[in-house]
Image 1 (cartoon, rainbow, N blue to C red):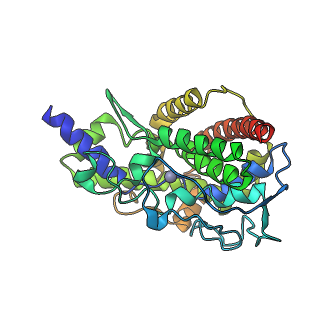
Image 2 (spheres, rainbow, N blue to C red):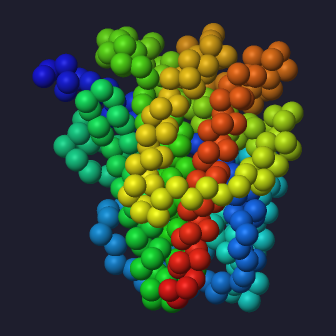
Image 3 (cartoon, rainbow, N blue to C red):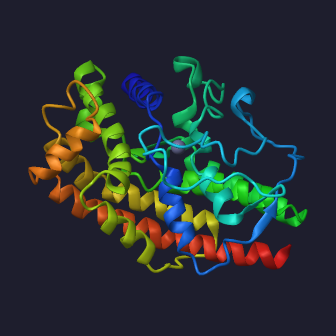
Length: 329
Ligand SMILES: [Zn+2]
């Protein structure tokens, strides 16, 4: 029982360092722009008028509109893509709302909260809201509930004929859905590594760095890889897949998929970046060098499979949700 307690402490501790896929905004832009839906439709920006049942770090729970500021764009991006024009006559298109706010939940709103007794051990909560661990018999964290919560908020907004907040909350939900396709959001390491990590900080450091590395790999593929244009095109061309209408079942399938993909991703991340993970997270230059040496070929193949599945599911989800929301409004 004591071991179980340490086990949980470890998982929670590791979560404090952990954010998400990098470049949610760029990835989401590519997905949203290729939907068979009129995403150019202009939506008037409205004020926030919602009572929410979830706690946030209010300081970072911004409710003004940020179109044209690139505020929630990843620092590792190129500062140019995706576009972020200023509003015209107080309106912005659907694609822009979904793009800007896809990265928003990583900018502090879930940090520094007191969500559960485990929280007192670490004093941080971002990982709790963005992940869903399943390690042996232990299940922890609420990434799946974060998705369901914002999907519900989006539906509430559309019921009030508030399209701006309908799409903005939907974008927050998309963030959590994407997070749960990142296998390190479903497991921190193998059972053996996690147990070792309780006594050996070096093991824990490798696991944290491996997680960050894979977060950044998506961004590398979108911006800096020599395959970047092909990669973007694959995202654009991936056909939607409609797996189930029930969002609870959908997110469960996503969690199980990420969980199932963990071993091959983890094995390959450790092999491709060995010698680096022990001390740091690889830079974009490291990624480029390893790609040129052919050391990322296997990881690319595994990742293409995950990204195509994520893209197909996300497109299916957005098409289903937006057509339903628009009909209801
Ligand atoms: Zn996240």
